[in-house]
Image (cartoon, rainbow, N blue to C red; front, side, top):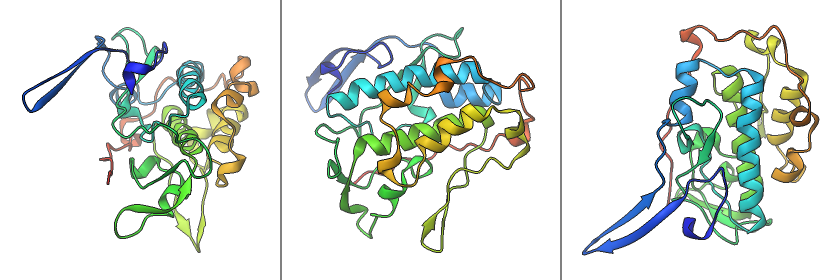
Length: 240
């Protein structure tokens, strides 16, 4: 699938070949490591840098979704930094769970991805066989995952989304770190992680939100938070 896509924020496949029982993919050289490790190193991102990262990723998703492709495993571990010197020049990678013809209310059925970043409609369709019992829009699920990524970028923590009394809770901004984050940034997270998938904006529409076109950010935001506040975890993806 990657050989048929071309976007500045998507890792490029140079070549692919098979030999005996093995299959090899030659990809572009990316030297900056993954976004997960960069967040741990920085502790959290300032808004202006998080905005740049999100702009690149939303542009990549708009490109993919327009072609009917859903990534289905968006998380910091699957986002690479092009160089060691840049914190914002990102590339979306690991299309092992990606699916074509995935956009639309019944585009996807398989329960897959990384639990901490999965949309409620994906989680709710899980059964004992790890299969979704109903269809869901792969594009909307990607948008949810990217909203969680933004939450992690700005706070250095993962949201405590959970199901209480058969209703999903949404991202909470009660922790002290969020006092220094602008309302514009919080609004982007709220919109991207709307419980109702139909209420989430498309990637292209999200880029038109005011936070992306302005320099709105909190001037009080610190460069980092204490190490003990870093509680993001590398979650193994689930695939059937």
